[in-house]
Length: 355
Image (cartoon, rainbow, N blue to C red; front, side, top):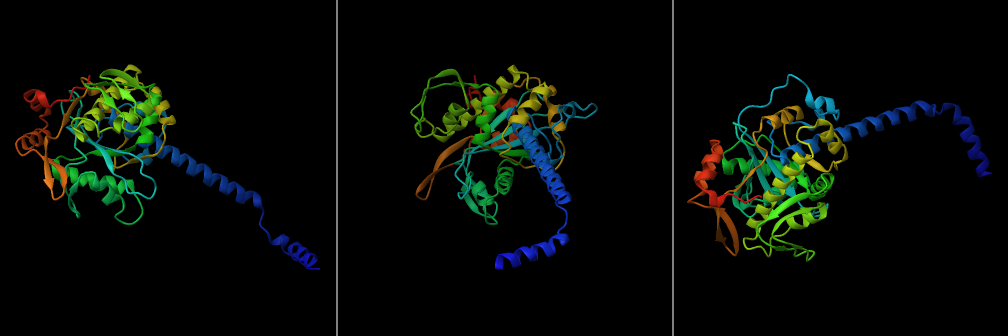
C-alpha cells in the first residue's frame, strides 16, 4: 500500500521535473572549462620551473595567463626583460599532507645584465637567518612557518616567506620563483632521458645503499632524487648536498641543450604537456613569453656554481651555519652589484666544480 502511494506521488510530480538535457549540458561545459584551466595552470607552472632550472629568469609571471600553444612561445615583436634577473627555486621533498614543508634546497639563479651565463647561488637550508615575524631560525623553517601561517598548508605562502627572508638576507630583488617537488623533478629528468651528473667524490646513499662513483654518470629520475637527498655521510654534510644540487642543475641544462629544448618551442611544449602539474609558481605579472625571450641572449648556458660563504656556529644546544663575517659581505655586495663574474675570478676556490 505504501509503495503504491509513493508511485502515485511521483507520477503526480513528474510533470514538474525540469528536463535533464540542459542541466547535463551545463555540467559538461563547466567540467570542460575547469579541465582546460587546470591544464593551463599546469603548463604555466611547468614552464617557469623548467626554464628557471635551465638558468633563465623572468621579471614576473602569472601562470593562468599562459596558453599551451607552441606558436605563442615565439610571438614576434616581444622584448626580453633587461637588467640582472634573479629566480628563487625551492626544492621540497614530500613530507605528507599533514606535515609543513621544509625547503631542502634553496637556489637563487642569477642572470647578469650582460647575459654572459647563469650563476647558481646556493643558500644553505641550515643557514641561521632573521625570518620576518618569527625571529631567528634556519632558512628552511621559513617555508614551514609561511605554509601553515593561516592554518592548513599552502606552499605559495611558504615560498613568499622564504622570498622575503632571502631578500632581506641578500639585498637583491627576487623577480620570480617556484616551489619544485621531488616528483616533478623526477618526471622532468625522465622526460629528458636522464641527466649527467659529475661528482668529485664517491657517494653512498644512506637510503638505498646505492653507490654513486666519482666522475660523470647518467642518472634517471629515481637515481637523481636519491643523490639529491644525500647529506649525512658527505664530508661537508648539507653544504655538499647543495653542491650536488648545483651539479644536477648544470647537467639538466646541458641535457636540455643537447636535445634542443632551449631553442625548440615545439619540443618545449611537448615536455610541458607531459609534466606533472604538481608545482607552485609565485609571481605577480608578465608572461612566459618574456622568459623564453631571454634564452637566445645568453652567451653560454653553462652555469657557474657558487654558495653564500658560511661558517659553522653553535646556538644553544644546536649547530647552525651563519654568513662568514670575513667573506660573505663581499660576496653579497658582488651579487647586489651584478659583479659575480669578477668575484668568482678572484675566489676560484669557492666556485663549485660542475663538470
